[in-house]
Length: 127
Image 1: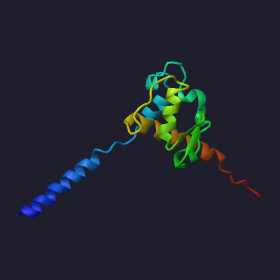
Image 2: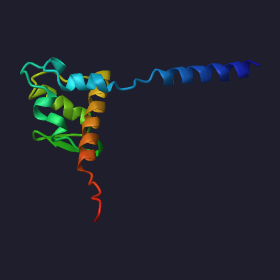
Image 3: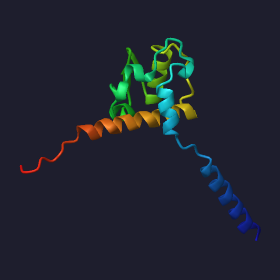
Image 4: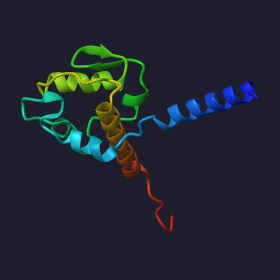
């Protein structure tokens, strides 16, 4: 009986911890992308200032092992975001594992997806 209770208790703890996982908020990511004060920005620039409509962003950005930005090599898109926050935006790096970063990266992926859909060829009737 004690063994069954232990197994049940363990299962509940595991299930509870899984439900605490953070789901990215794309709307908040969009707000951050367009905010001149994101990351404590001081220059008035936003992510959107340099990347309107996702310009300069590609699927490779999320899949590459090494990314070169402004002469610096980074390993993850989150590190690239912090380079942009610190340099063009004049702010301070944010937590690469934090909710704001997850929200922003989720929104950036939607921009890449929209660009990919625009590039797909349409079937021309009669050919």
